[in-house]
Image (spheres, rainbow, N blue to C red):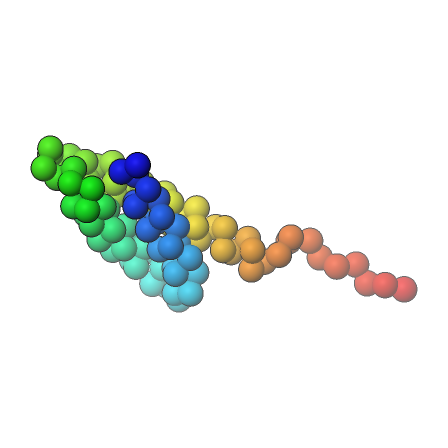
Length: 87
C-alpha cells in the first residue's frame, strides 16, 4: 500500500513529461523523480524508519515516469502502422 503514491505520481509525471519540450524532458524528469520520491518517503512515514527508503522510492518514481511517458507517446502515435493508399 505504501508504494501506490510513488507509482501513481510517477505515471502522472510521465504523462506531464510528454508535454515538455524534448530538450528539457530529462532534466524535468530527474527533478520530478527526486521531488516525488522524497515526498513519497515523507508521506508514507518511511523516513521515521530510515532515509534509505529514498533509494527505493526515487528509482520507483523514475521508472514509472518512463513507463507513463512511453504509454502516452504510444497512445499519441496510435498503432504505429502506416495507412495503405486505396485504389
